[in-house]
Amino acid sequence: MSKIIIGIHGLGNKPPRNLLKQWWVKSIQSGLAAAGHPVPFRFELVYWADILHPKPLDPNIAEKKHPLFLKEPFSPDTKNVDKRPDKKRQKKLDYIEKQLDRLFLNKDYSINLAGIPNIIIKHFFKDLAIYYSSRHMGGQLVRDVIRQRLLDVLVKYRKKNILLLAHSMGTIISYDVLVNAQEDFTVDTFVTMGSPLGLPIMQNKIAVEQKLKYGTVLSLKTPERVLRHWYNFSDLGDIISLNYNLADDFDPNSKGIHPQDFIINNNYKIQNIRNPHKIYGYLCTSEAGLIFYDFIVRDKNRVMKKLYEWYGRLDMFSRSIWS
Image 1: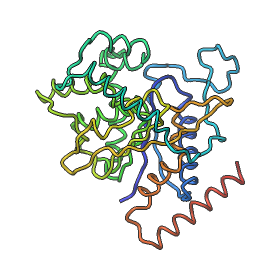
Image 2: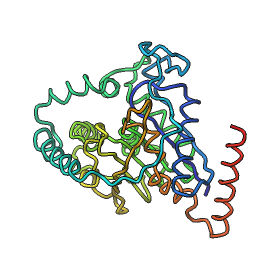
Image 3: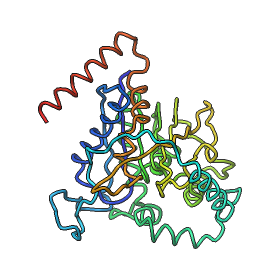
Image 4: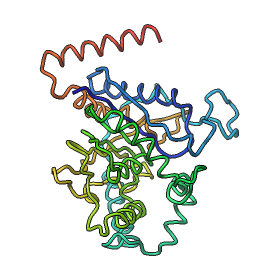
């Protein structure tokens, strides 16, 4: 069975679809190269920024105050850095997670001080507030329109082995579709990067919808549609994935699949300013590259793996000549 990587982006306005797809592909190629396995792959991007932002960011606009100015383009200088996690910060985040859960989240996934989380969402995550509460021009809920974009692509490639690669708010959309969709499809590997799924606010939103649909929720689980792996990548400096550890928030599905958490160093920088949440930095890491490589070449015999690696290196060499 042939394979495909399907990516879905996160919060905020984005550059045009084709340019964003090109930058995701370059970043994945960098990750594969950093892992020592520059193999070719097929990629499809689920682009939904235009649902909330009719005009995309424009890389040709130089005026920084312009609303369509692109502050953080793909940076080819993003390097993979082998850096061990800051244990002190990790302990602080573990403490913060416990306090947030204690303060806001009850055992039945109901929320204490319900008004405060909603204020936080509206103030800091405007797209997320629209996702949960607004209607699209056609009268549909915005979240249903956005989910349909992803669902259409997953159904389109349902006969292929799929690695679903989700960033930021895209991880919420992906989880919702994997759990709630009625169509027949599966995902071989689920990869989340910079995910807010561990935050009490998000878990409450997920549980509320599941309770309306199924009547009760005893625990949040890995979606049944995930067949082989759920990998979760976080940088300890990424404020969106403040709760970096999803393994203790989502129980295994019936196949025993559960989140496997990786703390990595997202070294994305632009003008020497680091953004540890940026997708390009996540994708460029060797840790991500190894996950992609394993998915791409798994089930191929040794000879085919060698040919695949050789072809990948030749393809990257030709790109470097003509770029």
